[in-house]
Image (cartoon, rainbow, N blue to C red; front, side):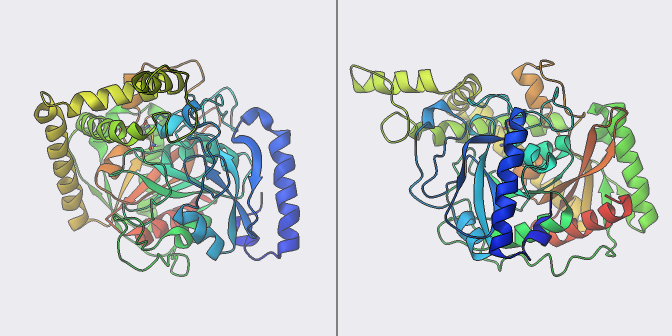
Amino acid sequence: MLTLKTALNMHEDELKEVKQDILKRVKDHIELNAYIGEINASDAKGVPILIKDNINVKGWEITCASKILKGYVSPYNASVINKLHQNKMCGFGRANMDEFAMGSTTESSCYGRTKNPRDTSRVPGGSSGGSAAAVAGGLAIASLGSDTGGSIRQPAGFCGCVGLKPSYGRVSRYGLVAYSSSLDQIGPITQNVEDASILLDAISGYDPLDSTSVNMPSCNTFKNLDSNARYRIAVLEDFLKDATPQVQDAYYKTIKILEEMGHTIVEKSMIDTTYHISAYYIICTAEASSNLARFDGVRYGTRAKAENLKDLYLNTRSQYFGEEVKRRILLGSFVLSSGYYDAFYLKAQKLRSLICAQYETIFNECDAILLPVAPSVAPKFGSSQTPLEMYLSDIYTIGVNLAGLPAICLPVDKDEEGLPIGMQVIGGRFQEQTILNTAYGLEKELGN
Ligand code: GLN
């Protein structure tokens, strides 16, 4: 598939052909189930970008892959969509995802699971599984995903493409259906680092419609992309005990390459990843329980039959939310309830501060941190874990969201079966240029 950089230089007539080609490819690979429903092509001109189904595009159905939102048509554009239009791009198709972005496999979608194009017996990762599978499978030039705890980086890693989670506040969340508002960020999934930089520059920037948007100029990373920049890169070897031998190997290989390139490697340590998991799953479920309260059968999407108002709420939410979403609403309501608030929610917030402080200490001395993106390669369907096991597979990605940092995932190696292994480069707050430069240099060195 042609790259975003190339496509941006094409004329509208040529782009029409590109769109036809994408439609054909999607049909030819319908088994991947990366796109949801009929492909929505907005009237806007420009390079087609696949949009995760939790980002509002005016006039398109938006469901977050949940039965509860089926039939709901968005009345407005998310700010990122307007930004695409200002930068010669447009939304083209909705990407499959885990229901309300809760999950790591895209198996919780009400549209059925997406398959990994590298090996269709395996999951594509999640929650932005459709966005990553489409880019890796040649069904999209680039896509937008959202990352609350790894949902851009982990599927990019499992499918062998590039995914970037921007610093919290960099990209407007206006028009992104909120899962966990203090963690969510929209970001690009692309075929290479250059394209990630181009798409980040396009969608970033201050937005008065999002009160958490940071009043800084838009990113200008593409012009300044420099594969020769050299940095102090921290490695966290204590974290590796949870990774498979292949992932550990890939980590050490990558460290060696970075060292040979002239980067300085510094060993660091951090609070155990178990605490990252606990803090994340308390905070994200608490926020989700509040954010998802709005789906009551009155204002959006599907409405269940009921005799009275209480039953309307009860029946709609019981019948149309999936199991994982219900689990999280229950957990979130529990940790916020008066008897347990101090014991769980408050402690999680303290942990979050501690994790932020530890990152800050590392970034006082280093420019970036190298970590695997997941403890293993993409698992097979059916090797299905318990919910807790699934939560534990997020160990390497969620700390970044808790601290609001930027991170980019890129493929660095393959296991013996040819499955991609991704690494992430994490940067200090608003240091997107540093992580893009590091990843760009590494990508060149690897010959990807
Ligand atoms: N797997 C994580 C979760 O289920 C991350 C999801 C995400 O980033 N949206 O919460």
